[in-house]
Image 1: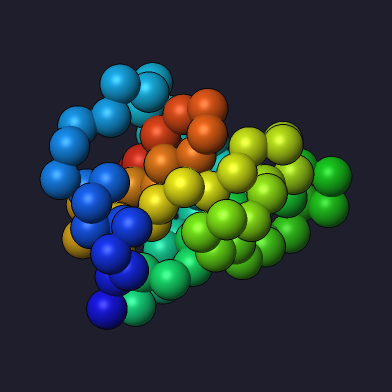
Image 2: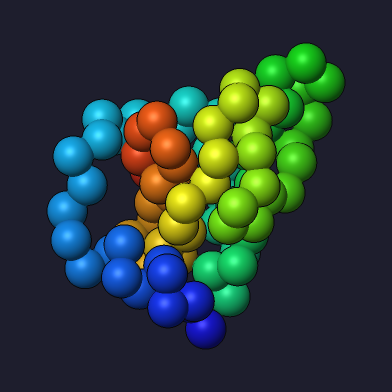
Amino acid sequence: MPSKVAEKAAEKPSSLPTVRGGGLVAITPDGRSAVFTNPSTRMPQQFRVGEQLPNGETVRSIDYEKGRVVTTAKEYGLE
């Protein structure tokens, strides 16, 4: 079940640029984690809300149903 933070973020449209793909590989069905490709290892790595991606961005929300992850810099969508 998505967190309250993720639900709130999903309610209002993001003014951040949306990137399709961009390293986002998958979102877990429970909406608690997103899987990105780590560019230095080229291996998948799992992240939760509040954790920092290898590029320095911090995950702000994960929306499984819409297939999107919002970070401090942009919004990622599944292809």
